[in-house]
Image (cartoon, rainbow, N blue to C red; front, side, top):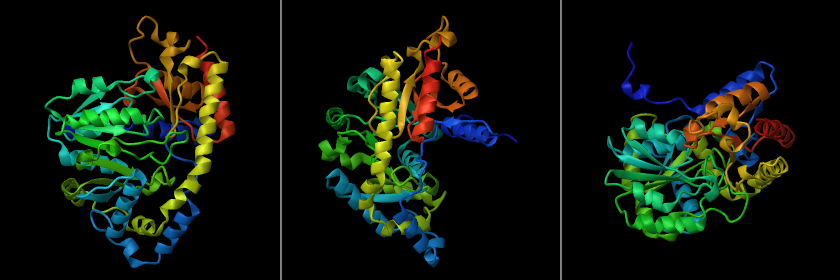
Length: 403
């Protein structure tokens, strides 16, 4: 039987592929250092677990939830957003979905027509281009580099805005770079967007609670409140509550956009888990700071460990200051090892081949940078426990400095 041309054009998620392969090798008895996973190796806060347990006795926890979410939870999410961002706004609504991935997907479905362009700031999350293409849109990447701490040059963004530009996706804190865009950048971006009133602004803020070096992230709409009227902000419990498997995220957006998204969600998945929503209604989000503090200490330690090892191995040009989310990007092209792959064609991308060799020879699972829009690189997670992480870094750096 023939499959649709739409699904044939969509790539598999490389992050999930690598994570599954690493898990399979580990189950076969191999020693694997899995630095590919984008999740914390801990359980959610005990208070949240208890709230879930308490809701198990109620009939409504097993029944359909409203398509756009339980009203009490929607109100709570919006109130928390205003409080954390120190903003005010009218005409906004919330739709709760099965994770932030679905949130972004149906948001794109609500605004894109075939041929519309969506600007992506590279490195970007691997699913953005595939989601855009699935709705008939055209991804338009804007590159950045380690010298600018992966903050794209605003003039480069301005150059690619055309009458076909429907949206720009801003992912800060950023997956995969492990940075958030500076306040100065956000202010300048806000000024640029005031000149393009027809462009939607999609702000992926899933890692906003996971900044482990000051200053904390700020957002463009905080500096120019008029932009709130065409901003969609995405959040989730996956990272901040260590609950990737519970699949609950949300979108804060103008009511017209939420209504359109609700139509898509209502005809596909219906509402998100009633059990998890009801538990969140009763959960005190002010406890997040206490829960995440040891996580941030761990991430700082991992980031510092990378810095010191790269410097000690005469690879300081690979280092930049990661300060949020879980990740660090390795630039293979700036290492002695790279010449063995590139030969006379350093312009080609060898990310997948290099990551495959690292997995097979060292037992270290990394995610190739290709699908993040950053060739000849790999994403490395900082969440592994300290001792095995140190072992993995030592093995990896030895590999990188060997021609």
